[in-house]
Image (cartoon, rainbow, N blue to C red; front, side, top):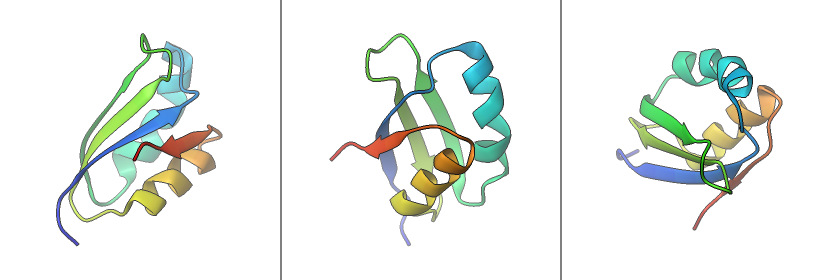
Length: 72
């Protein structure tokens, strides 16, 4: 799979939410870089993939206990 940039709407909205999701995203294979814009109303997660699929990212964030929806 090619490297791509993905964006998702989430409910990751504060520093403790970020602390909770960070180990899940940092340990995931295929994510080069990620960040959440907690100042944006939609709490946008932006990430650069190194082979991970959009669906795999969704499953990882849901496993961490957060809502996530792909932005098309």
